[in-house]
Image 1 (cartoon, rainbow, N blue to C red):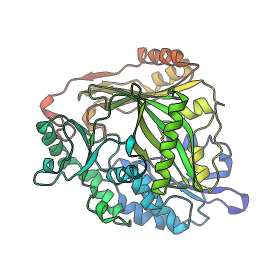
Image 2 (image 1 turned 180 degrees about the vertical axis):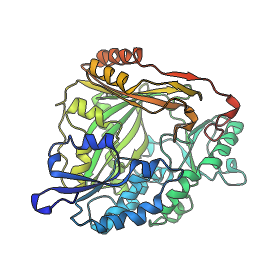
Image 3 (image 1 turned 90 degrees about the horizontal axis):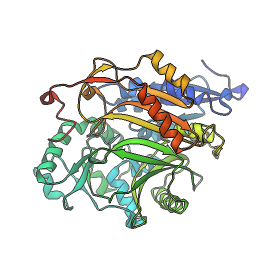
Amino acid sequence: MVVSESDGTRNIFVVGLDDFHLAQLKELPGASRYAFHPLFTREELKAGDRFPVREVLEDGPRQLGAFPGRVDAVVGYWDFPVSTALPLLRRPLGLPGPSLEAVLRCEHKYWSRVEQARVVPDHLPRFCAVDPFASDPLEGVTLAFPFWLKPVRSVLSYLGFLVTDADSFHAAIAATREGIRRFGDPFNEILAQADLPEEIARVDGNHCIAESLISAGRQCTLEGYAHHGEVRIYGAVDSMREGSTGSSFSSYVYPSTLPAGVQERMGDIAARVIRQVGYDDAPFNVEFYWEEETDRIWLLEINCRISKSHAPLFQMVDGCYHHQVMIDLALGREPAMPHREGRFGCAAKFMLRRHEDARVVRVPTDEEIAAIEADIPGVVIQLEVRPGMRLSELRYQDSYSYEVAVVFVGAADHADLEDKYQQVLARFPLEFAPVDENARGASRRPA
């Protein structure tokens, strides 16, 4: 549908639009004045064997240029390749948003650490770049065991490994060599469009970063934005982990229960880094650890987008999906995000995981899910698996677990939150059958 500009409706193109988030976008204040248009679908961007970066960079501008009306905004809530490609889609139209280089200073993990070290060195682990295709990759590592090894561009901890000794390092390198080009090659297509410092150009998308371990602590993510040079934080979400390595997320809980002073210090660190990298007129989120015993704060990483996982939590607690922030900034406006005007006092996203491959035998039916959601106020369920599939068929999981379902819960308080979640689990039929361990995908986990 082509919308007339005379009626004041804004044409907003969403890169990777899907039905779940379209429904959220349509609930935003003033959404009746927005016309949301897909610029590629989620399936086109995420469901194939490769990331269609070339198609996005070539066909995207053609589609926008052929649109018969005015293009008022181009937005996206997905990670790579969407967040990385947005500057290149907006630039020909002169739309608000950060430069490609500013985005890459956040999303290229090694370049980001180099920039962070210029302004907040006391809040970073030790790090170094690693070429997994070198004849002896370990020779270039300047860190002592143990450390984390991960690609400079990945999502959801894909190919992220805890390395404890030379044997586990070489196993991780073998898995990395097999899988890293899935992200690295398309990331290089975007890097080729940027003006890179020489030291960064040498560390392309098929490199890794090694980082020293951070002591156990409480993880928190700040959601914020930069607008006309001003950095603002509008929410903090606690991230809970599970598993022997602590690498898999089990839940996100909003609002954060960290002390207000700790959250303020995190906000100051985030603001310094965001200004350092030159990121402006767009949303972001920054992940931190707070080491409670020493009161030390560690910066984990920066993401150049709103977290879609957090959107329902903001709606439940604050009364609005934080897509509002994304839309306002893309239209050149200071965001108008409500605060604590929602139905619930707190909310969480729970991730149901399994830590070994299996075949899915039984999942809840649509009718069973609808009954649970109707009987327990504030519950929204998303299934990630289907009967007959193997968990190893799931795409872009972390290296130590498989996410089989997601449960969003809104509640009066944390006790009510846990009670509702347990009610869901008691009525949530999931059955799995073991598979041959020898047939499990070796590219996902080191031996």
